[in-house]
Amino acid sequence: MTAAQIFDLHNTVALVTGASSGLGVRFAETLAENGAAVVLVARRADRLAAVQSRIEKSGGRAVAVEADVRDRTAIQHAFDVAEKAFGPVTILVNNAGVAHSGRAVELSEEEWRRVLSTDLDAVFYCAQEAARRMLAAGKGGAIVNIASVLGFGVAKGVIAYATAKAAVIHLTKALALELAFKGIRVNAIAPGWIVTDLNRDYLAGEQGAALKREIPMGRFGEERDLDGPLLLLVSDAGRFVTGTTIVADGGQMVAL
Image (tube, rainbow, N blue to C red; front, side, top):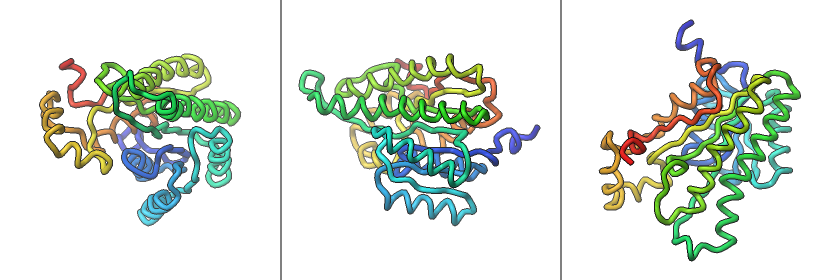
């Protein structure tokens, strides 16, 4: 079997959350370029429309659904739209997330809940909905949760984010164990510092230079550095891989 065949995603339907910016856009475009019909889910309809347009102009298939991943009814609607447009979802990329900064003793209950509800609760809600529908369709599938190296090693000022990402890694294992016998694989990707439009200016500054010195490869990741892990986990190339978290961080965790 050739590489083109083993990574081919034709006849698959992928739903990507947080698909209006950053890594979510890259994930959606990568999946579409490799043959998947893509369902773009996020809160910003105008940005979703732009991503959809780019995918379609490149010959791909996409549909956009405005939804807040914390709203279970909205998520159910997104899956309904996916099924009507392309058929049952066979790939879920749980990418939507938010971050925060500040000392633990000063973190408000509202901020704690904002981060945990998006970065953990919504990951479970989306995975649960995907799994239910995959089981009903009897086709199996792949769920990829986007975690972080902060799920393994903490840093100051991000207690809610780090807690949520650590839980996502454990959630991934638990879901994988329950769903493997039905042909549903559940894995995660834990990126290190990846340059996106959201953090480009910050990483280009003095603080970014200090962070870069902690990365053995001597550079920050690029969005394309996650293409390989993503395609492995959603394609036949990873058909015997489940319950694992792929760390893509330029060796940052090795140095801790």
